[in-house]
Image 1: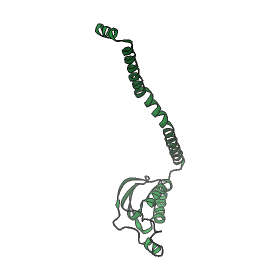
Image 2: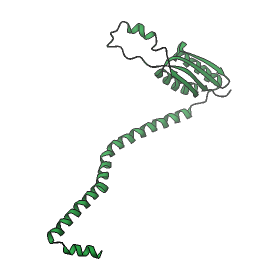
Image 3: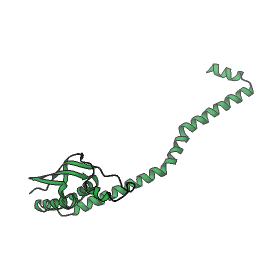
Image 4: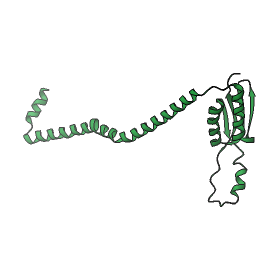
Length: 179
């Protein structure tokens, strides 16, 4: 420390001013990189994060309301649940699905079902029949687009035809209420 003090004393006034100025520049740069820049970046991103958090909160409130509504519904018996399940399968899938019931499990075999129809049906089955899937084995259908769409698209131009939906085959195992 003594050597530094002697070295400092040997500097001329102009050199001391330059060393102090250089130290202040380095100090200000460190202050900027360590304290101010991260804080400003956080401040800039706050509005976007706030909007994202608001959207998540809204989504969670909707899910909580749905859960409360489902909790408030009366429970269905085995027969009523099975009847509602069979009706929803016939209405949604028609011949593209077959149902096999074994005790408190129902196996639904699907052939060429669109993902949108399947998602909509799962929601209906949960609400109307009070069943949820306990197991799912699905794969893309090798059959391609449904044949019914070719007849309607034959009269339209190729520019107006929308891409065909992806179809799925497989088995869903559903848990039924106890008898």
